Image (cartoon, rainbow, N blue to C red; front, top):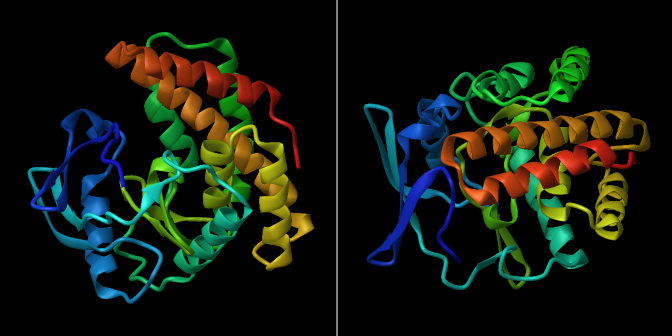
Length: 263
């Protein structure tokens, strides 16, 4: 289990992982919402998410502590395979079935979240407006879907694996959302261009009745949404932080947005 991330200062203290939120990211991350989610997470019995040991929110700075899982490695450290994909599906299914007090966790807002990055970036690409207009057409559909508890950020570093067990960590983006968001997140942020694994993932989701073939149009729209979202995020981060890694992410995500196949 490695300690890294863009949105928190994370360090190990007496074999406990300590996370301290960074004020810069308050523009787009709701720490009160995350605090509320951690409060709910402490109450429920589940096996798919790492529970906090303790946490507090002071003047919008969230500090949280978690067990250091020395036997687990993230998908940044190990190669993904079909067995791991199966474990991720099981985790997604369990997380989406968790019962929480839904008035405690906010609902994801699709266009508003895109606009946070788009409107706070000076250097914009003209084509971004065209893509955002497409998403506005999808928003009524997205908002009509049933709500589940959604992680919203299934990057390799947030998926821990040990033997036959997967655990999701890091809850900066957790909200109520539709089930397709986490599915698309795993495709766009972890499986990336691996068409063999994407095909396996989608077929397995259909086999275990998470989605059906008629849902693929919704999934394709959600994939497009996420390719656009993380392109805008990376462009925003590159402009504000001037770090090469964000330019590289932006170029990669924009290329996928333009060239992504449909399923």
